[in-house]
Length: 202
Image 1 (cartoon, rainbow, N blue to C red):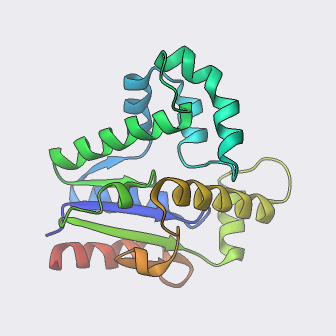
Image 2 (cartoon, rainbow, N blue to C red; image 1 turned 90 degrees about the vertical axis):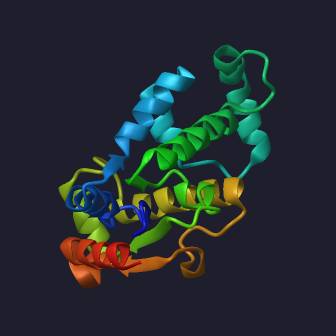
């Protein structure tokens, strides 16, 4: 049986809910906000910064270096790495440590790529139809102001840029995952059912 499940997801697809329900059903540890808490503790960075920056990066490397270097010098001493890169290093080490400790479900944070050399991991990507993502985002108040559909696309673009920058792989491309599920087609519980069945079978 696979013991580590990574859940990547389009914004508004319900991936976080699917991951949490799956962990509860399998009796696995669940890491989402919990991962952010640990990264904050070990890095000394604010949780809000980690949550905001941990899955996004601009398209310009120079912009990131320039905008983050002041914070990097304050938090990590004399290291010349941009703060966001140092955050990724800390986050990666924690994800590997979590994977070593036992059965778990990890949401986002490039965990699929970080753990790609392991054979006991199943990498899942959750998608959904745009109309359903907009409805979910509105119901859960993801974006209090502005055009929800536009902001969903912006968030996913940021995730894709971040993933490409650190992994040199394409975020959301089916061949990079073991399983891609459409929550509009199967529903949240249906997606949980499918993943649970495959985890136990393989």
